[in-house]
Length: 219
Image (cartoon, rainbow, N blue to C red; front, side, top):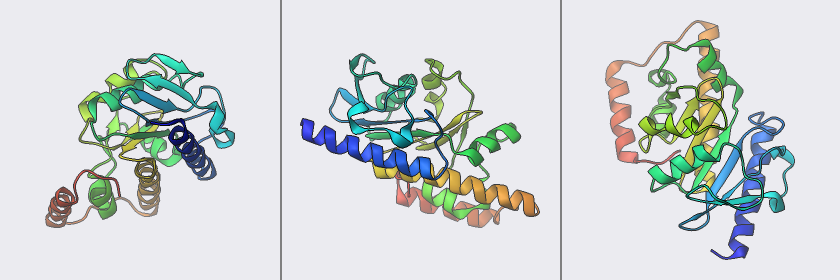
């Protein structure tokens, strides 16, 4: 990859960080975004900087082994590396802190996933959005807890912490994060208004079959 390409990607990452910040999915220095710019090089957001006001020049670069090549990368880079190592189609990763999605993981520790059977868009756009067990931020465990969910899931909620989405480009990864929070908001509103009522079983089965035809992409 040329430095010009890396600069273009850095500009895209900054734009997506601003979109996440404006949608209240990032606060202060929360969250991180990465993009695989070559077979062994990953552009990743820096540690300790407010992502809503970040500059392209502040981006860091690491390799697949986790070595720091440029800058001060996110302390949660081990989570990103696990996704890149296990998902051949992963080029971009977005980790943010969508409030309603996190609230579901706190309020309903019994759930294994967002109640996808209640909302057709969850099934069609993601397949499912599972809840990943809690891992201490900044540790290797953040990557380890993802392993059972990779590569089959591209959008996941990290219990008591945040959410992560990956895709073939930055737009797809961002769409995944947007889908996570939007779905969580609809389902939370339904719960408050009278409870969750799933679609008929035959319709749910149909939607999952349709999802198989769509393939592994976040819509």
